[in-house]
Length: 111
Length: 113
Image (tube, rainbow over all chains, first blue to last red; front, side):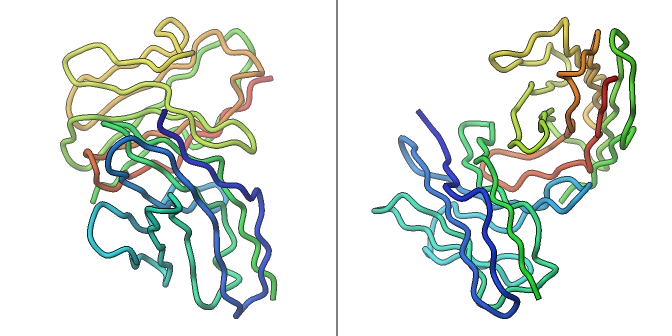
């Protein structure tokens, strides 16, 4: 079965420090992976995607993600966190025409 | 890209009543999706709205409870029928093509009292 897992409910990081939000997946065939961010009282915004090609994908707001096929992971990273990055982050897997979302990770960046 | 307008943005409704949520897209799209996000939880797909045919519902969701209309390629509605407090959630409209990024409306925050 196709699935996405985000093992951490919350990640806390100090402003200026690097951040990582973890995501692992299970899929038969090629994975099509996405990261979305949800700010309070807002819909989801697309951050980045992996379809094929380079394992390191760069996206919006300075975020990047590393696709690792052997570890079936697609962790979201940023070299230097901002307080404004505090939000809810969702990893998602594209399955036929549908998106399967992880449970979400709340990122809290404190000054 | 696509810009999605969803309304209402929030509502407080009495149990037993129904609420219709509208989703308008600024371009023609083949498929529109409706999601539910219960408090503190992830997004769950309710159904895929197809123009010119009945919506395709996911397991656990039925047409009588969540009737969907898709009269054209830029508009869809989701109705939450005979509401109970358990229906209190954020409902999100989305569009997207296979293997490309999806775009979401800002959501409708529904509280049933």
